[in-house]
Image (tube, rainbow, N blue to C red; front, side, top):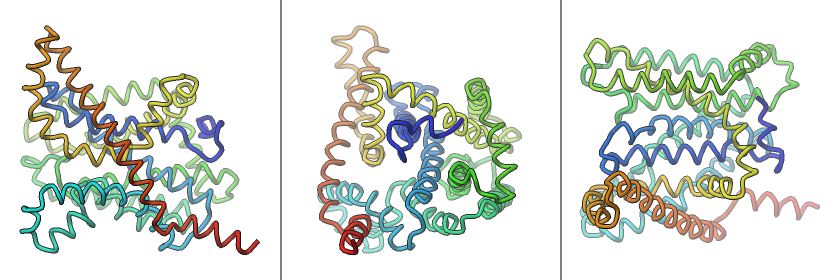
Length: 370
């Protein structure tokens, strides 16, 4: 399936990535709503959402490099910082001021860790690190280097995996081990973008991979259904299972990667269909535009979620069915999150106009030269 199918109305813009980011943030936030649903089976999808984010990041960077051409590391990395840190800094400063008495007791290293790096946000900590090898992989402009990086990362993954005590270890838990998996997903995104943007490249390594890509892209809807089935089964099997079964936890991430791939493939067609709908696509575009802000704000929804039972009890006065009132509680959360994220995005955009932008500097330099 060609990416051009999802870029027809705006050359250079990947509408499929808008859909992927919107879906990813819905899954990540949904995975934190255990207390709202009272069922962990409904509050799921966080690992898939993260995987979609990292794949989308790799694909987006690859297409951006093909469109803009080679750049210096400082300029390229600065653009990434200016995309993430204005919103992050605004929200962190608000939180710091609201909890100033407790923050005053923190050491400079702890404050730096909270405000600058690694921050309290897993995705930001990981992606800001991944950008560095990602830049050199893009600059190498070599399919072989990307493939070698994937296989080398797989080697690190399984070598590390053999050292884990899987009886007491959850593969999707808060550990650095999962960073290796998400880095592999990120590099797969870079590789996909390279194969799509270098169709006429005589590189002998690209031809067989394009054939493999074409094969993996055939019949995406049945393949999506199949991969979703394997993903669901793996999540069920590895929930509170025996130590023997837990030794094969890597299968959860394998099926997550498979499902991520086919969600991405189907998204290219679905994005084209949704663009024709008057209400569906504006919602997708909005969620995509404020994905970062939604992700940041999601961290501060815990007090709301912990008080969900009180909210639901009050809603039950008007809605006699608990299922309906819990859905309403989730809907209220989403309305609040989207509203705050939109406002944070607008504030961040306004502040960013006063910051030095490598893109604006390049345009000004070009206009002076002409």
